[in-house]
Image: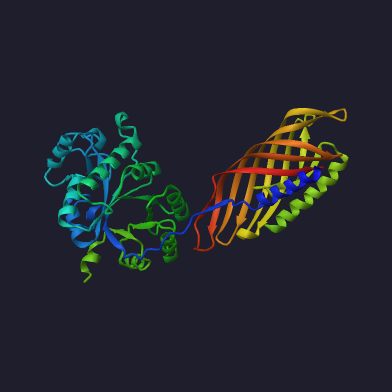
Length: 284
Length: 169
């Protein structure tokens, strides 16, 4: 009896000693990719004749490259607007609150104030333009978890999820399936979009920890990562190959100098985001 | 890393010698999933009601080409006692351990810390030798990692069941 106990003990030791402490993720079918270029902030900003995140900038961007990257905010009426910051500017002596605290009418009034100084565009206008004039174009929507600007909009994740619902609705309305991507640092939001939307891709934003980003994306079943190019960690062709081998996609941002654009294109990511539309306009 | 663990081994052999003449110390050796094949010493307080332990371990899993080292600090307290040979002994213990471990394979070098609350049962198998079996979850936190090749993507499991079997002298 005692011998049997020791045999069981030895078997348990042998079994336990071979347990795997590291979780490795399986390979997926390899995809050949042609890198797509996205106009950062819809093709507007300092490098462009147009205001960032505006319809005019988007038309300019879409006429040159494969798609757009835009930042979005949501109004009190649950309309998704383009905008990098949640805060709204003062105009004509009128003070405006932040996006989630202002109605669409007030945002339109601000748009009309001071001529062309402030321009606000609905995400739906961009989707409509893409569907009607630029079929085959892509859009990556950056949804940020801003600190709440008022108590009534303090449910930041809830506000983000409403943006997600609206993105899904617009994607279906304009038949832009597999052309729309959302990117965020907030995993819960990406999981929400993944659970509720079809035809929308979801990317985890990473400011430089490639290893952690790829592991989190694989663990959560996300489409891929949106990686800050040449920020904290360099990214190479081997990183890109590895990501593709694991079935993920990658966006690189923001790639602006000619040298960086050529380097980024040479390592063949899925997407690059750039402000330098002049570089691509000059290409034959 | 190897000289460091060799030094720890020598210290524990010394402690084992000390244990022969001082009942406050035990010497133990065994295997745990996160502790590896380990040896160490346990120091008792308050009539063996509390104890702290220190051990060093090593494991090599040829199947995965993994080699790991571990240093374990533990605090144990007894929860049930039995009377043996006219004196009181404790057969159930609650243990809290912190395991600092390093694991290297073809793809990565990992350094991590595992927090392991567990419960253990002691069996007296012969005079002066006890067998201890314990089990509990291991909560793992990565402290450092270094990619060696671009062949695989992995990450240590955040939570894993851990078991440890020890012979205590």
